Length: 402
Ligand code: EZ4
Ligand code: CO
Image (tube, rainbow, N blue to C red; front, side, top):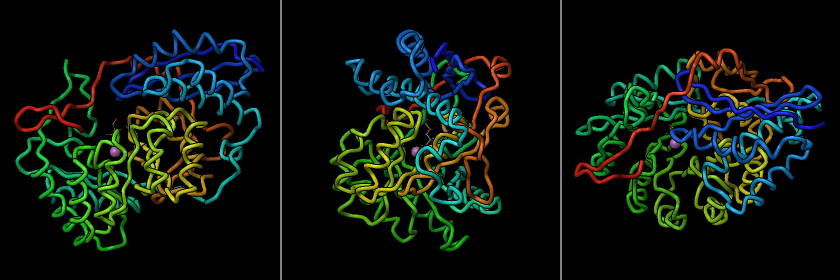
């Protein structure tokens, strides 16, 4: 088999998505997600100008060699743009390989290790009462694990807690939305949120919380301690993990489980965190960590150290990324949980998917390949719109992590 053409498809059915479609001389095609939220066009250029031309005429079954060719062969390794571009190609090649084998992708990894994939979804509110109510709705929908975020008194709006932040898309603005942040106000309020949620729904429901990298290690240590009573499933992204050693300090002080890694691009970003067992869950996901080839390697490495998997799965990764993740999730022995924030109906129309959700569990389905496709005709109806995630500043105007 030979690769005959590579198409880069950009569409925006509510969110921007970059999709790689690879064509072969035997008529099989494969698709992969290459979306890098807020920097989409950089990946498009990287793919179109530098990678796609080098794929023509290659044997699509040589996935590992193609991965190494683009990773080692570039001299310039790693980085979100490079790794999202490689991921798009790699995912499309695995799709083709599984279709050629006439199997669902998880069979190529070694088959299913479980019947279904536990997922967690999001619930949020501008205040505690609203957040508690939102959790109740998610429980009614069958979810077993819920990430809860809440607005903070004294701060105008906080990412992931209100209407605007739910889509966090600035398509109608010329500039990213700017939010105001105060760590001390936040730290005082969050334990009250989880007191109220536990009070309302008891101990059985799994609860998670995401801090979006805004704390220092000692602040994270304190928050972890303050939340121990709530028995969280995890506390996510407490600090920016460029400084992996920072997690040693957090770990020393709290038994609240820790998750990090949605912005990691390679195994090297997580090496120390995993080797020293400084985290409990690694959040790397197919599209941002170099594809299935690279994510599988991270997952196997993590298994040696009892670190479990928890692929990032918010709406800014396409249903193709979720589909690919779910095949890994169904197989991976050290599976933890899969994030699932749901998709707008327009997105699901553009990306027909074999995966399904039932009673709080996902399943990748039994279609051959990874089971997700793109309706190119429909995608054309949703042209790209420049859009950004918000920006975060302290009350004095200092630009902050988020
Ligand atoms: O903010 O995907 O765990 N999920 C998250 C997401 C991220 C977005 C950023 O692109 O943190 O909501
Ligand atoms: Co997160």
